[in-house]
Image 1 (cartoon, rainbow, N blue to C red):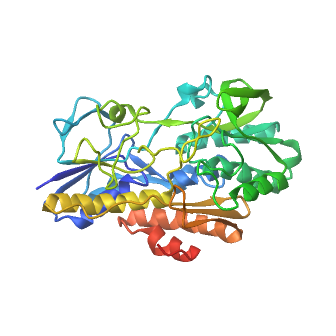
Image 2 (cartoon, rainbow, N blue to C red; image 1 turned 45 degrees about the horizontal axis):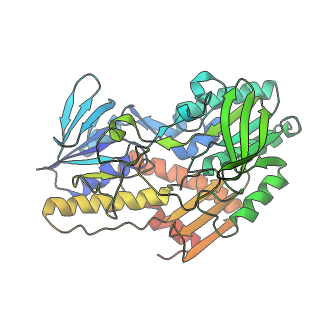
Image 3 (tube, rainbow, N blue to C red; image 1 turned 120 degrees about the vertical axis):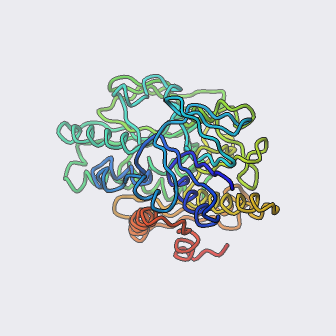
Length: 421
């Protein structure tokens, strides 16, 4: 009987664990290893940052939900992957052997790439974890007491830009409700060549949609922006005209800032020879399997995805919830095939669907497939997107607590959007 280990317990790792447990006979062992004892629903972090959610409402303890399903849980950080010997070394020296490994750790925020950008320094804040979002909310409360300038955006190389767009619009809506918007100028700083590129080269009318949304909310924006350094209340930004020709240099002052960093691979994963690209993100084939290690699979934001287009300031391609769901489904079926000695049956086509909350409304972006040419490419706005994002959060948390691997996008969201795959 096989031992399947899932490294990471986020929105990729948890469905993987449930799916493997559902797919395989009980004699096969399934173990989840995560550096924290709790699950965090990362898509809710923009809401945490303005107090529309608290941390407790979008997190839960892992062990009580995994172990009743026959899934082992170890709450320790993995220090090293010995891929040749099929073994993990955990903090404290414990060793875990596996037959199949699923890497779903997510990425490591590369704060070191921009001087002064680590949230621990206290200059700016992040949305990468629930703890980061909670710290951003604490600072937001100080801003409410002493209003001033706000900068929201992303560093060069960042991907998954949706959350910082969401935060800019959500904060605008929150400040308007408080009758304080006139005392808080907001500037959006992005490496995208234009607002709405989203690391996808644009999706339908996404440029017109997001530029109009920013303009109507009096949010200034700077594109082709490379943040070169951050200090107390000050951000240095170079605005590029082309990849090798910086143009205007900005010295932006702020009272509060949240910026999304570029991502790289976590140390234990990035250090495995032949497993990752230069940034430490896991290389996978069409089956979500490592080309060099046939018993290692990977899903989520920690995998290597090429950029959709070359831009003056680098931007990464996003990995959306629908993509992660498709990866998880493929991995579960392919590991079952591999154990049974069958050819791998599932290949993944990366499709991008993003539901972005905008405070009082929202925007849906659809790019099928993610890389052009596409057979579906559009964006639509409306109050219904805001409601759909809330429903997605509630249903996802309920599903994960119940211990099911149900495919939410395929079963509900595609139908809601009127999309046939």
